[in-house]
Length: 376
Image (tube, rainbow, N blue to C red; front, top):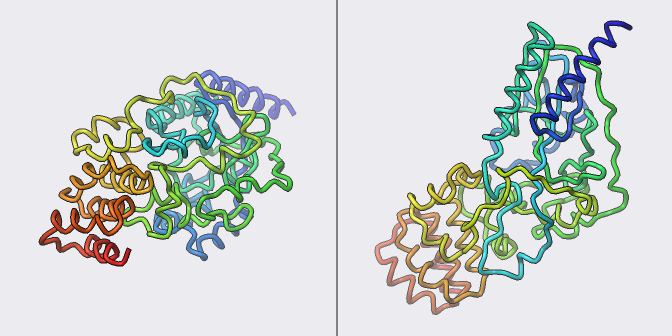
């Protein structure tokens, strides 16, 4: 009994340190993920992970955390809010601007949260001398949402994001694996009820059933994880989204309770939404504009691919010069999507521009888009 009280007092010291560091949510889960592991296997079997090969590569570790940290006994789960301003779908009415998911509008969250985790690990080592730990923020082979649910941080909603009563879903998750038995938190309960707002709003029908996401259809996957061409059947649905998609979170009733964070690192930075200007970024301009931003992950080729699609959906003939210039880009991925965008804006008239610029073109993806133009 005395030992249990001592452990709880030590855990409370760690919790207070976590809050002091800027974490809002704190809970402890046992490392067992058997039930979630069964679901994960089924999800992989249906190839819902798309081209995210790291999911299959890390399958064994995700299903057995002892392979991540030998002797693991507990998982400390944490959340960090990134919500800076109320969101609506009004961005769809401004086709000249690109929409970037809320979490990626300024500093890369890894750069902010990982140092905090290291500080919290130092506190753990002080409180529990000799304990071993390993921390992750969205980068480790961990089923973080099921663990966070068991740790009481929230429940996995029908859109597959974690939801917290009175808080919503605009937050990052991170974890510290510990080889120390800690008192577990009370697991969260599901409060989605009969609501299907997230399923109904999804532009590509990616939420194929409640709590089941086919990543291959998800705009966040298509604009961030997918490295190659965006399938033509989804390009119109992208609208003006150029990095991620928040639609399912925007319409979620629980996010009406979201409280804004004052963390400066997450406040929206200027000059990252004008589509025509973005389409003209060279490599140096891209690096400068998105320095220390999550957007740098998809590189210039990925961003300009997305921007070209958004311009094709914009109805702005003012974008034609920038897209025409992109036909000479050294990156075939950008050239092929610029061809598609010009076709959307000009129809068959785009052929005159395209054939003049692409004489001698040999890349198959670009030529396929040119051939498609001839049938428009």
